[in-house]
Length: 544
Image (cartoon, rainbow, N blue to C red; front, side, top):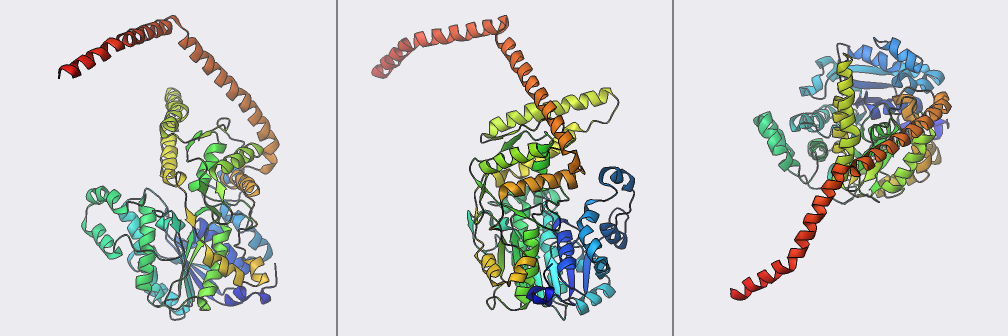
């Protein structure tokens, strides 16, 4: 790694204390890893809540050194290492002592005062200089009350705490490029709020669940869901309540597996594009409703993380216009566009070059531009087989899960439909300008320029990452997986041939022939009568 002494950004972080919300999420863990590896911070506080009976200190320990009830089963799949421990391997090998800089703070983004004890709040107010607010719900179908509490009130609570921090130098808020997705062209600026954030908060306090959910479609329109709607309003809460706080906003597009660091292709969840990639690779997702030729906007997770770290330095240095909040769009579409057609070709190549060892069927899905045809395809190749599988499971006395899993997949893909049918232009001028201000050392350490991104290589890396970190499969198994794929290909084509033959036999049967005869004879009689009907109409018109 480049000597940090020549880096302005790393020097800025020297002996600084950092507070992070959402530190156990996908982006949060990558942020923690990069701060520990590249920035000589004094201490990192992670806001965490107890989960499933596990206290925050144990959860923090598990994040770095997994010890838990699933260890035995995970060991057989991944050599005893989870995604979290693999993520921090590089640090543990080169500088294991820095892990001691991370401390868990018991709290909850959904609770008043973040659920902090008086002692913890006082400690944070006294010590923290940099805040990264990344906690949010990214569930597109989240009920309005939940989305408001996490995305809006959570932001309001973090701002309230930040105002008590005596040494605060910078606060970075993670929003989304789709917060203004009702607009086809989005600039790095704060757009008018769809409604007063305070009024929406009051509605969630006054209305019961049934009435609030009935109003939700009318409230969020023309945005597609509560996620994009509440993230847009959270930006306004941040600016309105933040006052003179040193704030910056990062708007990433669809965040995907890592490109270059800390591990190429690293990913730990099935959200968004990762779920589609795994579903296609497993042979489960066989039809995708998407507009041909549109530009899709995916961003590798290490890009927004590096941008977040640099933007905190930039804000603390006062490198922005007075009385304004700098907004940085983190996207690829304007610099490295990826069309849906090109993505299909990349996916076909990568899924078959590095197949999963546990595929259910040969991955041979297709994109549909007609929704009706897509729904028919999903019904025939997903829903019907799922019911057949569950019926067999019941006969065998086992728990049926296929229909449940299928419905989840259909729902997840349906939530992405809005984003698969539209084009956006996300301008990232300020992001590019920030990149141009960096020294060569900082550009090397905190790389967030996507000019050198090669989509074909990245999708291949992403596929391998899904195989390693999601499916827990070793890349050494690829040759055997390819042989299995070839056998599945043969079986797939054989089944297609049998089905085609069955349809042909059905259409050429005696009963089908009789149906054809009745239909065509009826059509012929109708056509033969048409001149007389036309004449009758003319006579009727003349009489009137």
